[in-house]
Structures are given as C-alpha cells and as structure tokens.
Amino acid sequence: MTEGEKVTVSGLIGALALFVPAFVFHSAPRFPGSLTGSIFGIAAGLLFVLLLAYTALKRQPWLKVRFVHWFSLGSVLSFHAYAGIVGAILAVIHSGHKFESLLGLMLVISMLIVVFTGFVGRYYLAQVGQEQRHQQLELKLLRDRFDTVVTTGAALPLEAATNSPADFAINRLVGAIADLEYAIMARDTIKRTLGRWLVVHIGAAILMYGLLTLHVWSSVYFGLRWLT
Image (cartoon, one colour):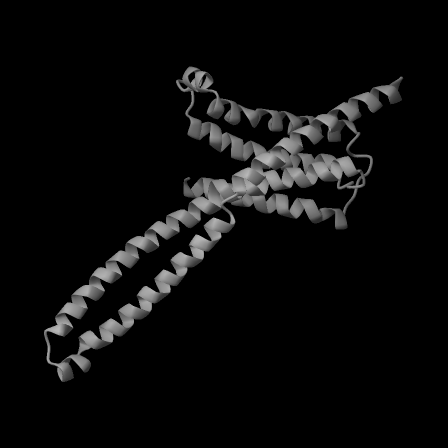
C-alpha cells in the first residue's frame, strides 16, 4: 500500500461519504430513468460485476495460474478497491438521491457496507498493524535501554543511585514504556473489534449482488412493459 494509493482511496471514500447525505440538499426523482442516469447506473453495475474478478482469481487456482503472467493478484486487488469505490459513487449519482424504494434503499445500504468494510480491511487495519509493529519495535528498544540503565544504577551506592541521572532516566523510561504498552493494547482491541470485517464484507456483498440482480430485473421488466 503506497502513500499515493492511500491518499487516493481516502479521497474517494471522503467523496462517497459526502455524496450519500446530499439528498438533504438535492433530489432528482426523474434522473435515474433518464439516459444520463441510466448510463451512470450501467457503468456502476459493470464495475460491480468486474469486482468479481478478484474473487474468481483468488478462489480458483487454475485462473490464477493462467492470468498471473499478465497481472499480479495485488494489482487485481487494487483494481478491486478502486472499482468498488468508483462504482458506489456512480451508483449514488444514478439514484438521483431518490431513496424512496425499499429495494433501492437496501441496495445502497448494502453497497456502502461493502465499500466501508473493504476499506477497513484493506487500508485501515493494515495501517493499524503497521503502526503496531513499529510500536512493538520501539517498545523493545525502550526495554533494552531500561535494562541497561537499571544495570548501571545497580552498580552505584544506594544514596548515589537514588539521586543519579540514571534514576531520572528510569522514571522517564518507565513512563514511555507504559504509554507504548497502553497504545499497543488499544490497537489490539481495535483489531479484535474489527477482526470480523471479512465476514461482514462477504455477507453484505452477497446481499448486494442479490439486490442488484433484482434491481436490474425490475428496471428491465417494468421499463419494457411501460414501453409496450
């Protein structure tokens, strides 16, 4: 995960978070059925279908072996992340902020759950794990320094050791070690709390594709009936 990728994805997530509640200020009930609205909807649907490429390559070894010469699984995962967020933005635009249909509302909610749980697993938890590894390394260095200072102070007489610079260094080290241990424990709690993200992500994705199929079917069925 590069810094540029992190900034880009965070920006897209921020844009999506702003688009969704914009129905308070804007609503276009006729837009979803218009030509432009339909183009946005079809583009979003195609991106959601392409998301399945990552799942297929990951779950089917024969596909992975066949296509690994053209692109890596990591690049497909990056496309999976970008396509999911961009598809969600296009879908929200397609809706025209008309959240009156129960089917449409459930589709939007499941889609947002898929996007945000994917962001949590792909970027946020990875960032938390990376920070935790750095903190554990720093904690080890502080503990080694603490052992060195304690060993040095133990060689001094009791009165001299109590008032020595080593005594002040020990106090500072103890405070720094306690702070780091607390931060690591807090990150462990976050990882345990969000550790079931993949279950929620897959469950919401299954629901989203089912609702998307119903949405496309109803649009075609009732749309063709209206034309006839």
